[in-house]
Image (cartoon, rainbow, N blue to C red; front, side):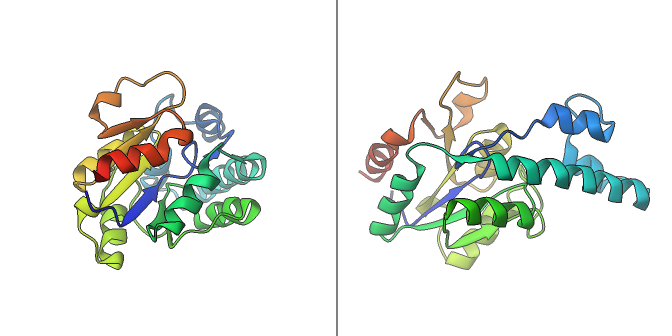
Length: 195
C-alpha cells in the first residue's frame, strides 16, 4: 500500500467524548436505537425539527467541552505529518462542535468534513469527497473509526478501514480491514500495511 492520507472519525476515535446517545434520544423523545440525525432530518414539523436540533446542539457542545484527546493520538498525528501523509476528519458532528473540539485541543487536519458538508456516515459520500479533493485513489488512504457506521462507509467507498477498539471487540470487528487496540501500535500498523 502506498499510504498518502489518513482519515479519522472524531468521537471516540480521536477524542474521548462523554456524548450519551441514549440520553440524547430520551431528551428528543426518540425510541431506543433510533438514528438521531436521520430521524431529525425526516421530521415534517419545522418547529419540532428546530427544537430537536437545539437539544442535540446542547448535548454536543457539553460533550465537546468535556472531551479529552485519546492517548497516543497526538504522537501519531505528528508522525503522519513528519511522513508527509495528509490527514482529514469525517464526523457526524456539526461544524460548530468539531471546531470547538479541535480548537480546544489544538489538533490540526488538512480537511474536516461535518454533517453540514456531506451526508452522514454510513453514506460514503464524505470519504469520496475527501479523496476527490486530495486527488487520491481509494487504495491510498485509511479510515480510522470506532463504530459500524465508519466501517460500512469505508467498505462502500472501497477504503481500508481501521477499527479503533481499545476495549471489548464489537461484533462487527471482523468487517474491518484492520483493528487497532491502542495508538501506541498505530505506527507499526501502517508500516505493516505499507510493506
